[in-house]
Length: 88
Image (tube, one colour):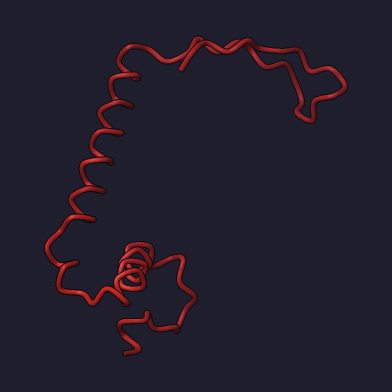
């Protein structure tokens, strides 16, 4: 991330106080962000290309993937509602 210029509060800003200039990311932070992006890409490929998806009928593949996504985020599901796989 490039350095970002700060600004004084002024009347047109809703925050309370001046914003100092940002020094940008250090080399270590840039390397960590690049490593995490590579890891995310590799994991997305591993899940999307997993042999399991060849066993799921094409017409239900999208809903099965969405069900997997919901299961990884249980706090997003309303309490007491079963997932599509549990209801079937």
